[in-house]
Image 1: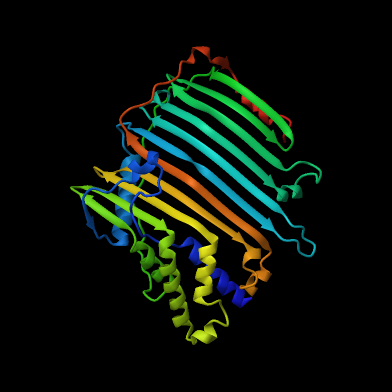
Image 2: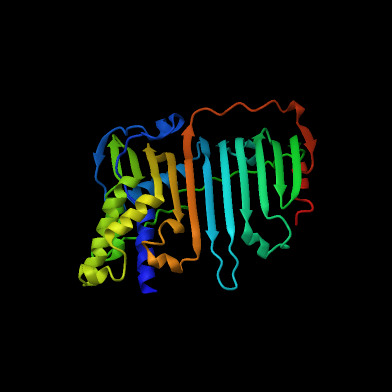
Length: 379
């Protein structure tokens, strides 16, 4: 069991804790490249404590801004997760799949009163499919365990009223629903003062980091913090973090050698407990098909003006392909694990213009949203 545990620890480090390499925008779709263009200013070195305080103070300043800026939030991408298990004594094999393809853009502007708030949300893609055998634990064994929803629409707050439109087709546990509506909620928003939080309400309190230089936590921190790049121009900052597959070899090698040294064993003794370094690297090479993760933070005038995240990750582990080389896998009751993030994008930024609202003249006035009918009979 100890042998298996050490092997899994190394594998988790190899797959998840990777660090930065090339900061170019190669491989990023054109619509997202502007979020990750070459930073302006000179590169500066900041201690982790100073970097955390800089980000925290900028975040608080942005949240407590009483000038009612326009905030734009964008999300898009494809997420897929597959987990197949193997049958064991008294346990059936299961097949579990989740597929989610989505895209939306939201603009929000607060105001002095609740009915001054403006919201403009456009959902251009929402395709969710789930098929979980595990759901049979809670449902009749003969009942379908599928969940399939396709949706497009919008949600708006304008001049005291809420509006929404939606086109939805769903198959939930064998029950089909289809809705196409444009509706306005009859009850207006109340006229109440909207109190913005103050700096005193949100104090910046970053705990002091006191990491033992020889501890595993300190080694991991050094590996990761060393890959964060910070640029300064006048009083503006750009913080870049770029993760990709290229650094995995270096990272895993360093971690493996550190574990070997701290064990006090010879390499031969150590490899009796865990696979060799080359075997682990070969496994990572075959399992991690693609890994590209980027984070950009921009601080302007002491405010966090932009946060952008992009990921393209393809991890596909098939136990049958590795069982001959890794005897430890015989104890793992999983036949396949797949994680796919394809052009997964998220951004929050402050912008100068608010999008135009649709023509609401054709929206039906309702006291209760009709899409609540979708939930009837599904409980």
